[in-house]
Length: 120
Image (cartoon, rainbow, N blue to C red; front, side, top):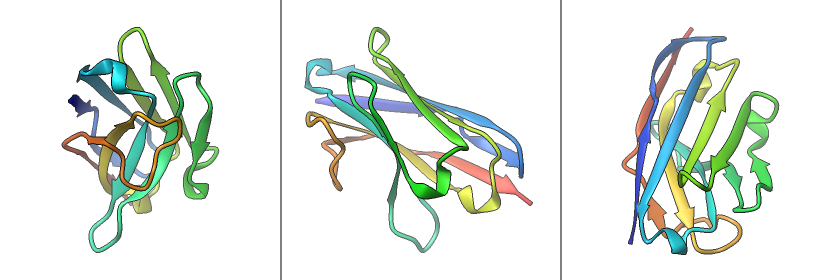
C-alpha cells in the first residue's frame, strides 16, 4: 500500500501563492503517476495537475499558467506551486498516485486532503 501525506494548505488572499507538498511512503515501487485533485463544496472532484515519473505534466485548463506541478523522485514527493490564486480555487486538495503512467479518474491511492481557502 501507498500512504500519501499532504501539507501546505491554508488561507490566502486572492492573488497570493501557496505551495502544497505530498510525501509518499509504503510501496513506493508501485508509484508511477502522481498528481493533485480538488473538490469544492457541492462539486465533483476534479484533476488539477498530474505528472509522470519522467516529468511529463498535464493541467486543468482553469489552472494553466498559474499552477506548476513538480516531483522529486528521490524524496518520493510531489509539489503543487499555486500562484495568482482566485476565490474559485478554494477547495480541498487531494494528492493521488497510481501505478499507471497517467492518472485515471480513480487513482489507486489518495491522501487525506488539505484545505485551500482563497479570500476575495
